[in-house]
Image 1: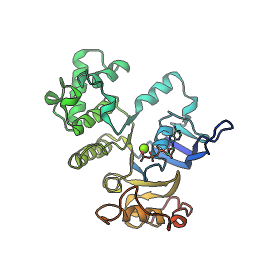
Image 2: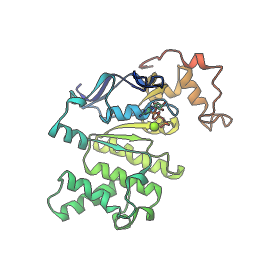
Image 3: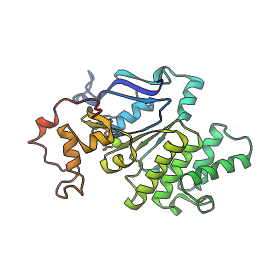
Image 4: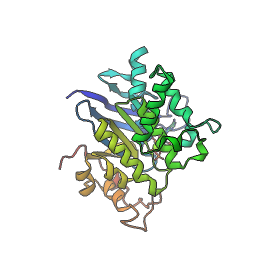
Length: 290
Ligand SMILES: Nc1ncnc2c1ncn2[C@@H]1O[C@H](COP(=O)(O)OP(=O)(O)OP(=O)(O)O)[C@@H](O)[C@H]1O
Ligand SMILES: [Mg+2]
């Protein structure tokens, strides 16, 4: 099996330099992750706010460099990539972020976010070809081109805007989509539709997906594997069926217990964990197969 994207024991800390007054904060602590070329899958990276999910995502995108360890794309360290290699990486690994509104210019029609990557990466030679590509990408995420193109961002719903962002990522024919909380700004009814289309991209087009979320329910719905982070440390990982159905680490158990349906009294971010802190700080269990 050859690796498509691989994080090898990456650690990233902030602050704590000689001139810094702040204490060093280890946002991501010795995490490894591997997507294989031959076996496109959906990996969820889950954990509560501040657990290091976005920092890990940024490391995987090469937007920041690790203090220790490395991230490699097709065997090449991201920090050594230049020229064409780097351009290919930028095209083949597409991020989708939480707030799609921030990615739009409110004065430009949504067409702009779709046609600009085609132009930037010279993906089509003729206007007609570009139009076909855009229409196909919109259809793949369940949008009707004639009802979507020609509109301004505020004339679409939040869910439609986010789907346009998925369509934009698709135009580049990525091998990996890295979605950081892609549906948390979208209302519940649309969440399932968007996640279904992401799952379809994985199954039908063989695109690997890293799905960053604090929501175990959707992670369970769409992912093959899950990694549970707490304070930057990997507490537990494995197939979703194994980890979610039979969690072994106290932190994973706490997360599952705090899913609103499971226990309406507990709320995200408001857990009284003082008594259980020692349990939560127990070392990670690593990868579990059963
Ligand atoms: N650029 C930065 N400078 C300093 N500290 C940072 C920086 N980026 C992240 N951190 C800190 O690292 C920790 C992890 O942050 P991160 O954004 O990765 O968490 P997260 O799991 O994505 O949280 P959320 O669910 O709220 O998005 C936090 O304590 C955060 O304050
Ligand atoms: Mg985040």
